[in-house]
Picture 1 (cartoon, rainbow, N blue to C red):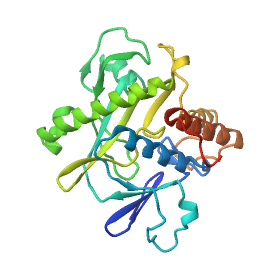
Picture 2 (picture 1 turned 60 degrees about the vertical axis):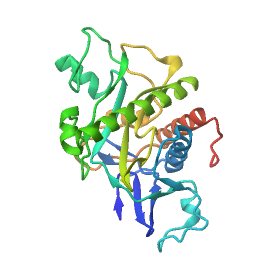
Picture 3 (picture 1 turned 30 degrees about the vertical axis):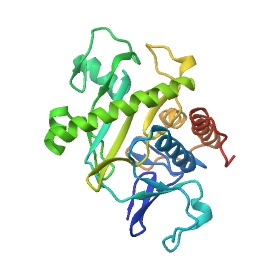
Picture 4 (picture 1 turned 120 degrees about the vertical axis):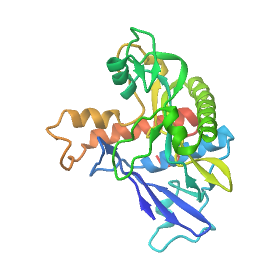
Length: 282
């Protein structure tokens, strides 16, 4: 039905099949080199959180044994990287929660003293922790374009005030629960984004959830405000690309084996620390 930067979506009739590939993107480009097992890590982390959080969500099963797959799909290749999910009408807003001043929020703060309309104290350092997490919605961009931050009022104009308030409440509640668990694992959940969809008049948490692709995870033992942090995501990929002559406007270069191995290891480390499980596809 649809192919994103990482995920492929197939119609199973009553349900959908959501497949996480090993593709990796950076600076809005899909890179020519894949990260082995990345799709399995993303799927297994999402599965863990859907079960841990115990909130209404779109996951039906990750067991494909009784599922009739579309022609051309290999059941063995899909093992660990596919979810059977409910067909939902996607809410056209990204529900972003920020616990720390970083990334686009830091740039916004330097320019305006605020983050997405939330006025902050003067003199905060990069990566400072907020007193309370901020809910900062964004539009869902299509075709590879950037998501754009919007105000709560703009969000209410898109989905209604009642739905906007419910999404804000749920997003902050989920972030608090996930952040507390991550902290117990020695990991800081700096920020994340959630997606929701309607199914039989009920709002469900959908897509991936709290993965290194949709969230910013930092090791707690090295956290130091005032500087960039180590992270469990595409850090090695971005840093490598910044050292090349790539102009970010033409097809990107291949990744060296060392960068691939380091990135794969970081994704797996995030899975193992958050879930307490050993990664089964080592």
